[in-house]
Length: 299
Figure 1: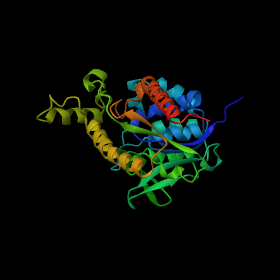
Figure 2: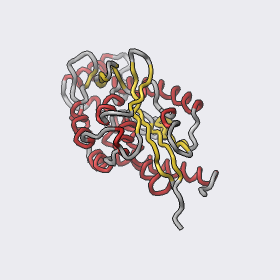
Figure 3: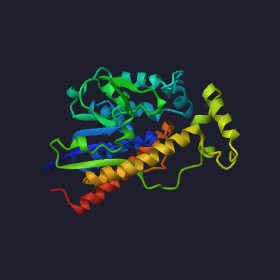
Figure 4: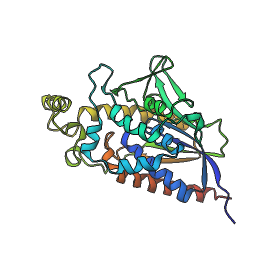
């Protein structure tokens, strides 16, 4: 007799390249969970992975991202000469547009909500209708790095700015429990120093890389702080803020199952470490699902 699947909502948090772990989580849910995903909500990288899964386009993305090298990642970052962000983000989004196509959120087989931040009105915005591509583009627009998106008269940036673990949008959906994946878990303290793993932000000889190297060399503590680039400082500041917000969101809307990815698992731009991060997400999810099963065995 086939065991009935438990309807669940899936919440995918923000955290740069650590979010590749979401792919492994989804695989673990499919192989070991016993759950049927009835709704997905995502912020930033969580919106990207969640949207692709809701559109049944995650497999092509996974194949592509697993093949990326450090040089490929840097090549996707197109320097912006505007004052709105260091990168336009159009190269990577053109690739994503090819994967997503002209899908509309309201037509997806799984209800989906991407969360972005309205920086003028200082509120989170739930994008659950219209172009999936545009919703993802708005949700991943990291302030200061990628140019923001104007939608319906609102200036939208990365959802993680105000809602790094957007549990609330899943509440209206017909699901028995909520599974949340936070990318701000306790550090594993196993991350390699930047000089050993290769600092993506400082590679190459473009104008931005030369500027970053000059800034680092001018610091009086340059030798001691050599593992930190300007990107590291931005990313760590963003992570510190998100860590507090995630705690508040979990306290306000406690998920039934919480899967945590260490906040030092990889750098914000380390998309060349896809194999490692996907496997980490898979193992973390499998362990969390096992604990949940022991606490409350499936009927």
